Length: 355
Ligand SMILES: [Zn+2]
Image (cartoon, rainbow, N blue to C red):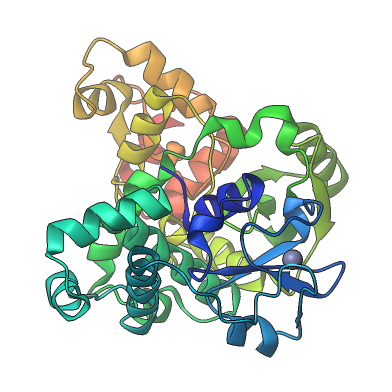
């Protein structure tokens, strides 16, 4: 599934003027904001910021493009008008939009408005709302507030409602990382913990890599190898909440499963990673438990491989999967780390038996 800014970026790239009014995009390097459909040369994705309205772009310090004049009111057809009004209503209600009522006000049936929305925006109204809410959570998280506050602020009624909706988002398209994440801005930070240095990296959509090791330089080099095309920058301040959650997770008093993720994987790997996210701290599962849980009871080895391919330690808690005979199995960051994590999470019984 695409996320909100991906939908918008596609409209920019294809100069799709149909979404004019739904959003504007701004270019950090030029300080200018444009409407989708602007004929100017395409900026680099990493330099682009999206805003719902002209006002938001102005407030962020951008000025209107002289070429596409996003600040001029343009006559658009009634359908596009209705779609723009729908976008505004989604933003105003933080996704709690009453589609039927709005459709009535605009003089459409609900089904008609939904079809029009899909025709203009390219995705269904329901997925657009979902993406809008997930994006808001991320944005708020980046500003340093707690996960719970971010979830409520984004208009989810409960944390569990957020996870129900957010879980499928683990299925990020591999295409994003084709080409070594070329042009992506990836920020990272690190934190010293009892099990070693934990290095976490994030795109503007979520955490994309969490590594554990002894040598910070090696960890950083490996990050560059993982995303050779990306622009990689240290950002301790911007990621301080992530560091805090990870450090807490190692002491067993924060849930790294709360971090928004931006992962690439095969459909099978993603099913496994989603299943791992449901294992509570303090519990373990066997590789065959997980295989059963995802409905592929014979795929035990493939489950073990998917665990080994997990690029976000702690956030996808593959350390909570052990062998049926009670031995630890493998761990990409070393068995002592796995054992220490299980101990910290209160898995004394298992970990003692395992060592
Ligand atoms: Zn322009």
